[in-house]
Amino acid sequence: MVFKDKVFELLKQGLEEKPELFLIDFSISDANKINVILDGDHGVTLQDCIDISRAIEHNLDREEVDFSLEVASAGVSTPLKSIRQYKKNIGRVLQVKTNSEIYEATLDSVSDEAITLSWTAREPKKVGKGKETVKKMVKLPFSEIKEALVIIIF
Picture 1: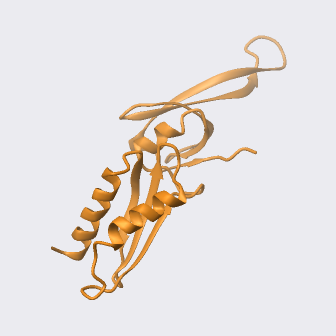
Picture 2: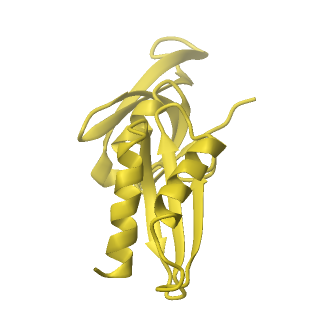
Picture 3: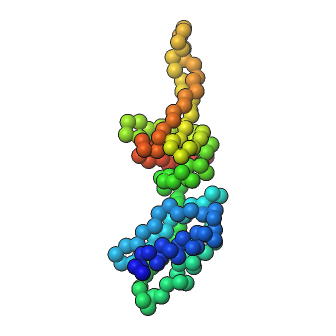
């Protein structure tokens, strides 16, 4: 079995024991540096990273292949990649980039094909002078989204 396939199989087994966690990114460099990025429905704890690391490391032989292993959680600045990540962030403010626009809005809903964002904007009144607050919504298919980041509001 190829080293990468063996590591990925061990990773899958470790994640099966912790169904609240899911894989964001997995890579192995030419120098056998294994990188695993995780996220979870309720976040990722240090213990979660340790458990997944042990599930991989304790089942590999360093005499056979010398490797280094890094298991980490997806950081705040990591773009959203999976539908599961979008779903866990419903109600939060996202910055979403498409080919033509950048939206900073609240994530209202997620389907298998698209997300729905909403925000308020000040626009000129249709009748009379002044401005009024208008609620806006947009449905963006995943195919149009280039990058989506959670905006942290203090």
